[in-house]
Image 1 (cartoon, helix red, strand yellow):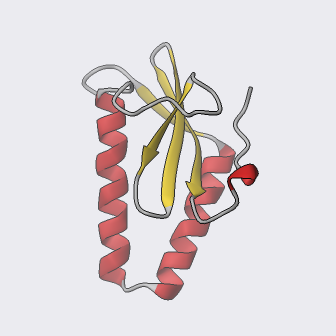
Image 2 (cartoon, rainbow, N blue to C red; image 1 turned 45 degrees about the vertical axis):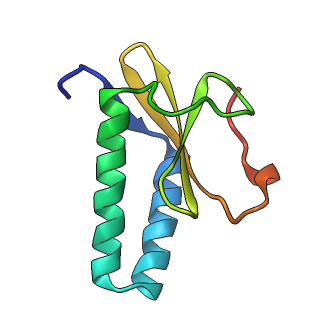
Length: 102
């Protein structure tokens, strides 16, 4: 954490990650799962280094959205020196299912 930002995961985001990993482990090869994990780690590091790197979500301007893969979008919010991962949303779902906190 060179820039001092702390990364926190919401319970919802942790559950989303667990669901994604379970699906990947059941349907993809171990190599592909490792590629996904590396991509996620690199993206989180980019967010840590520059929280304003990605655009604001159209639903709420204080929340930013980063497209990780064609199916996974990271929603996060920055307050002071803390970046909160809100959800890892599966973009194949109905967008109405995306509920961002107020």
